[in-house]
Each structure stands twice: as structure tokens, then as C-alpha cells.
Image 1 (cartoon, one colour):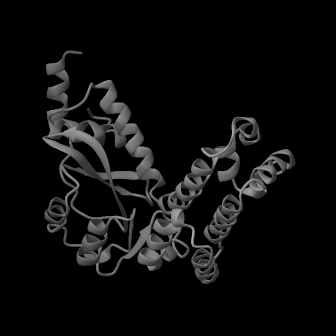
Image 2 (spheres, helix red, strand yellow):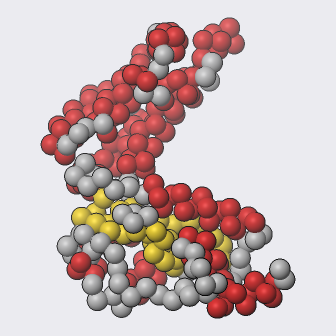
Length: 271
């Protein structure tokens, strides 16, 4: 198929702006590098697992201008996002009846990065003859302890004997996983208080960013224990978009890029 043929099909594609917002929406960004903007914004419907629309940039102004024309903004009940203050401010202003939900993956990542920073800094101090005890250390130390085999737990215990700080970081990581596994908001609230108190007591600098994030975003993180929605589908769409962009060697024209994404995500049998 010729390039001009593909361009004609994309111009014919039924990818006009939707007329009604779904009950739940999720915001995220991806590196599209189209239309003169490095990043584009994707809006999905996480309940029905569909791509709602693609915006030319991730700026607050672009998102606000896009949302103003929708008359059913008050009907939106849930907004899923990562820790992005711009998205949060938009959600508060345009969806007054919606619960803001922070995606769990992004919350956990703060803790695992803190744990891994402790591990890396300690391993750099090890003499060569002791490094043999730290094979697969990243994978083993970041894994849920109750999911490890008996042999792997024994290997972790050997690692933890080398450093008190590593042991403390591991305990914080396990307590964090316990908090994230809570079955209700009330339980999560109690376990989060315990984790924050433990974090304050141990005072490991690598966990400062995680502690600050939890305190700043606490109510929105706890909302995820009431409503089990996440950005998992949206992240999957972002991975698919990367593949589309790579196969096409990139898109300079945003309209063509948007049409290609929407056709791939929501195929139209008449095209």
C-alpha cells in the first residue's frame, strides 16, 4: 500500500470527537513527538476498556479546552491518574462529582525505587569476595516475601545479615506491600498510618520521596481501595502506541497519528 493511499484512508477514518463522556475516565501521557509536541495525552474508559480520545499535548490548557464542550461532566464518577497535579486540578474543576483515584502501580513504584536505592548503595561498598551472596539481589529483595521459595527466602536472609540499613529498608518494603494488599479502605488507612510512623522512626533518606508522596496524595490513594480501577488498560494502550509509532517510523502529523491510534484501538469494519 502506498503512503498516499494510507493517508487517504486516515483522512476518511471516522475519528471525530466523542459527544459524551463515560462514567469513568483515565488520563495519562505518552511520548508521541507529533505535531510539534513531544508528549501527547491519552484519555481512556477503564471500565469498558476502550480509548476515548487522543489529545495533541499533555498541557493543562489543552485538556481544559477539550473538556469544556462536554455537557455531561457532572455525570463522571471516577477519574484515574498518576500523581500529576495538573490532571488533579483539571479533575477537580471539571468533574465536581467524581472521585479521583491514583493508580496503584505508580504508588508502589515509589517504594520499590526507594528499596532498590538502598540495595544499590550498599552493594557498591561490598568487597568482591562478598558479592557472591548478592546474586539476583534486586529481584529477590523486591519480591513479596510470601511469594518466594524457601531457598530464595534463605538467600534473602543471608543478604539482610550484611546491613542493618538494608534490613530496615526491607521491613519497610514488606510493610508497604501489606498496606497495598488491604481489603478495605479502613484497613488500608490503619496500615498506612503504621507505615508512615515506621518510616518516621527509621528515617531512611531514600524513603523520603515515598513518604512525602503518600502524605500529599493520601485521600486519592485510599480511594483506590473503594473503587478497584487502575491505569493498567491505559498503560497497555501506551505500549501498543509505541509499537504503532515504531512500525510507522514515527508520525509528524498529529491528526494522522490520532486517527491511526483510534483505528487500531477501536477498529471500524467499514474502513
